[in-house]
Image (cartoon, rainbow, N blue to C red; front, side, top):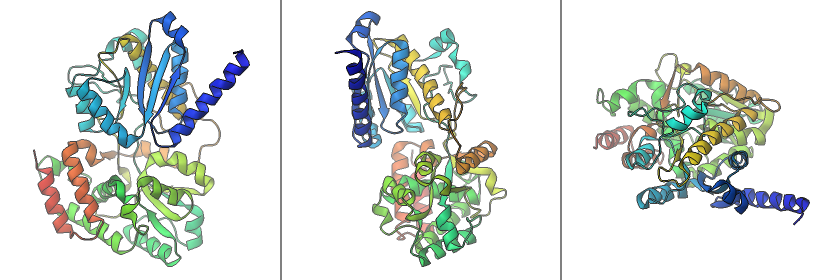
Length: 428
């Protein structure tokens, strides 16, 4: 096969990978060939979530730079959660693998002793200095076991500027203004807020933020046993969820809509607002362009200086890339993971997103006005409350999210909800 045909074949294969990735199922691909594997003494395997499209080209680029054969698999997030747990138990992990953020997710890996410390390769390459302060987690033994592949992110309220103008209202800054906007949207036949209730977590993080707006210290104090989850901040926040349900703030049948279905309602101009994480900006910008608006979460409660706080992913248990301690190509796998993390960071910078390390890249093209404002706001937040689910065990977190979903059915009073939450959170 001549060089031109080889190039066309490679492009075809990469295109097939992207189409497979968009389907929501696992996609597998190899980069490099038998010659490279023979000449360089090995190959690496990589497991990643099937998410942002730049993750695959970045992996391929690092593999090419290191002159290695790379077999990778990008897996639907919900399937991945099960697959990684089975792989840990069966000791069948790939050389490099990703993991979700959260206490239970990280402890699954560290407690099983399946992750290799990266300190030696950081020392030999000098690459540790490239990472922003706090983006590399030093565990109790002094070791660094993971590198980031997603930046810190937080709760956002995004809206459709054109729809908002057509309704003759302004983006809400207070609870009363939020209720007014919801009323006007319903009056004009527009979905006020798109919510993927079926997936549970969108409603969960909305409630987290409502509690934060009542008292930014409430959750940490309750978790530490200083106060109960039945006290005023939690009750008042639950009452506001109930009020939103009664005001028809969400689309019909929202408890049977996935988060992706809810996002599509917003991206296609059917919903006025969406309360979600800052990860939605990429698709929102491409869908709405200059019609995309963003605001901080409104002042819905009694907390002073509410706009200086937010809920999000700033934590000691971030999304991480790990290296299998039993990898046959251990040193090569460590170097790949570190360089892959930095390559992903470069891609984030190029598309104008938040980063976690130094980069020689510059944003390509115009930065969306809404996203530029978010980046400015993110840097100015004095406190970011880590999403609750990430700070508790998975078992406890799932039981809590099941309870939280019931709150959105309108069948629980705020006292019933908070009493049940107190019982769940106090379990060992």
